[in-house]
Image (cartoon, rainbow, N blue to C red; front, side, top):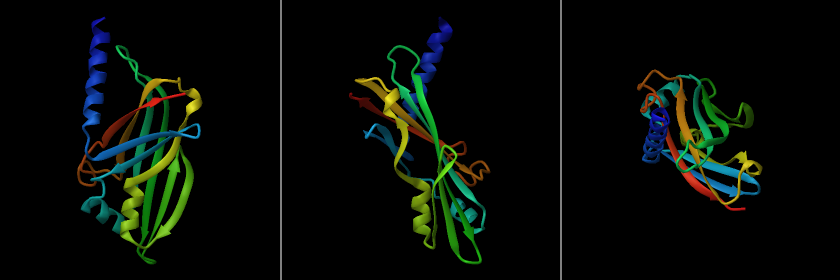
Length: 176
């Protein structure tokens, strides 16, 4: 019994701290039988990240996403998980960036760019990704999406200001 109470308190504390993150903004949207998730990482493109990219080192931002059912007074249930990555590799000879985005290991978009601003947006702003199907959701229930952002390569806080990453969450009600 005491272990269950401690687990519940630890879970609630983790969720409360995730909500206060100002570095990562998460916005879920339910439409067309999908849960579309957008997220923006405000402080991820640091001078150290820029230097790593300019050196030709492949840099990947990973966004691990969980969809959870809010269960009052009990442990919340994970309904699904998804991982989105945004990668960039700079070619010093052509002075072009190769950008790649994957969702759950499948490449969904690849393009090239010459502008560093496009690279910054590619790595830190992901809009309307269809990460979860609504067929697994119960109507008129509270859900939330948790996103954890990390970067590779990682040398502690040298390339990433959050050392182990940052996380945030956003709640929504699925009305059916």
